[in-house]
Image (cartoon, rainbow, N blue to C red):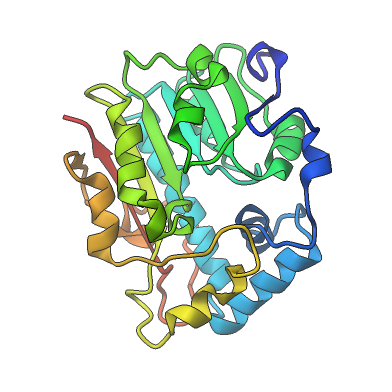
Length: 285
């Protein structure tokens, strides 16, 4: 079984083992997300932040699961209908069921997937939990979306993906942790420019468009103690990430309405039934 590329465990942040660089006292988006999904890889600080979100919005857990379900459907579209075999999943989070490589390789066993995250715990658990098919390959590197040079120039990435051929760039639930002063649209453009015609971009992003009664400061407060602040954005703002590329049907939509699967269990989300997130997939002309 092919596991991580060359059996290596790549880190762009130094040689210290990932486990020694984990601070359990600081909540991290990947671990908060794991807690809200019902996972086990989180600390008290992450649970406290997650509980604050649930208190603010009782439908948070269901919304997070709906967000994850969108990712599964969108990756299935990329691997099947779009015929993609190369995936760069940035901000992947802690491995859970229905990961990108599991979905893509179920459609095409030769699919290659590179995961990127800046939380050392993702590397620790990824090494233990991520597997690959006999034909396909999967690897994980520790790097930050805000440093595209470190990702696009990483030897693991370039050893796994052929950038002369179409690549599916996945940024699911991560861009809302990039503040405006980091110029998120320009960052995304860097990645878009690195891939050829026929490549795809998958983005999902938190919004408060469906919750006008919620103050942004209250919504983002649980993340203030962590390494990344949250920035909800409007439909128009999220749409800027796709500029110059062609959105596939149904365009940029609320995640629960993006190609819903009749065979997939649809949870009822308290508080109006909205997942508070947009999602879309676009193709490079």
